[in-house]
Image (cartoon, rainbow, N blue to C red; front, side, top):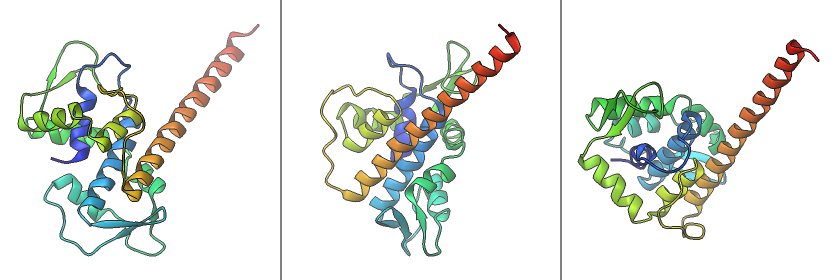
Length: 201
C-alpha cells in the first residue's frame, strides 16, 4: 500500500466533518504520491523543483505511473505544477483502483464521497494498514488529512517532521487546497451575482 491509498481510505471513514471534496482530495493524493516517490528515492527536491532519479519503478501500479509522469527535462517541474497536473481527477483514479482490488464496496445508501453510491472500505489488509497509520497519528498521513479537512483523532500541534522535502510538499498541498477553495468561493459569488441580474430588483 501507499500513502495515497491510505489517505483515500482514511477520507472514506465516517467522520463528523463535511465530506472531503474530490478536487481537494485529488491534490492531496498527488502530494502523497510525491512524498512516497521521495521516500523511494525515485525523485528528490531541488528547492521546489522535482528532480527525477534513475531508479527502478515502484511496485505499486499507480505509484509507478506517477514516477513515469515526472518531467525529466531541465528545469524540471515545480511541486505546485505537479499537484495540479497529476492531481487532475486523481481521486476517481484511486477510487477505481481500490474498487478493482476489492478494497472498496459501493452501497446504495447515504451520501458518497463521489457520485450516488456510498463507498465503504472493506475489512481488508489495506484498511487495517490505513487505520493503523491514522490511529497512530502518523505525521505525514495526519498532515495530508488535515489539508483536506479531516480532523485528527489525536489533536496536537503541527506534525513533527524532520524531512525538509516532505515539509515542502505538505506546505504546497495546503496552499493548493486553499487556492482551490478560493476559486470555488469566487465562482459562487459570480454565480450569485449573475442570478441577481436576471432576477432583477
